[in-house]
Image (cartoon, rainbow, N blue to C red):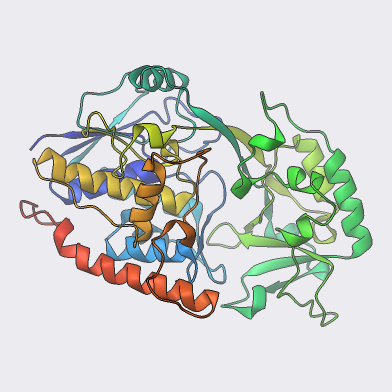
Length: 443
């Protein structure tokens, strides 16, 4: 059986390698860590989570919740490892990031059909190949890919990671455990701010000194991962209607909603480290300590990691790729993950899944099974490959990119649930079709 090369052992690359191997396809997985690290990576393990430790909402009325359920039913490695290392986070799927990466690494390295090669890849490997090197693809490989596509430019945007603090350093006299609207268990630490404190915080945040980021401009910031200081500059109340919104949270000391609330989410299974939800930033480290310590519950906070800003790079996929994330000119050259313009952990995983399943068919000389827009997985593939796209930008999964219902359903939540149920019924019908007849016994 012909071997497939997968370059990059992030979420998309690991999912792709696993799905190929599970279908009896030998895989050569190339990963440059730890020989060479990107500015955002710190650990040698695969599938490192460099931003949040949350895979976001789990409810079917939420598009990412639907996408996760599709992947669960399709035996996703990443979803299985996430469930195995889950930490409580209300209605979200959050993981112990260290345990998660370690488990993915162990699964990949122990698979009999996956061979791991360490070192930087600078030239495009011979097909069949899936490139899943992420938004921080090395300069050498980026140039190679650009040349491969005839000199077409990449599009660049900037992404940011939130700071982490120790649980024991949080002043619980100014905070309490709860989940918004009391959904699920009380997994978030909620840090209240009154109007005067909030106003002072916003003033200092907007004036704080930023780390140098070459070419950074507000208009280039991806809306889904916008630095908190950029949001603050857009209006004094922007944060109160964004990550600091108090809706659905009542301070047990007053019985009322505070003026603003900073939420902290558990970042490891032991519950000793929490991240500041929505506080992606590129402020200088001393400025982060100074400004974020203005939050009453964090006045004595111990920061174990400050927020960082890094460059993300992605292809103008609508001009280049098909709905299987493959080069329109050569179906045995595919891409996966954020380099394609999907945004988010689960979305990257889904792209790796679809690129790999399609590749498994193609290397056996069979036409791949298309996932329709009625499914979240298919909708993402169609989004990045739509030749009519205008001002193409990275996209999280959302119900707006799925095919609409052919009948009216009253209420947004009911409508979303109906779309989700239709998608899952479609996935269930596709399951037999994507299991190759030549496939060896699954591991």
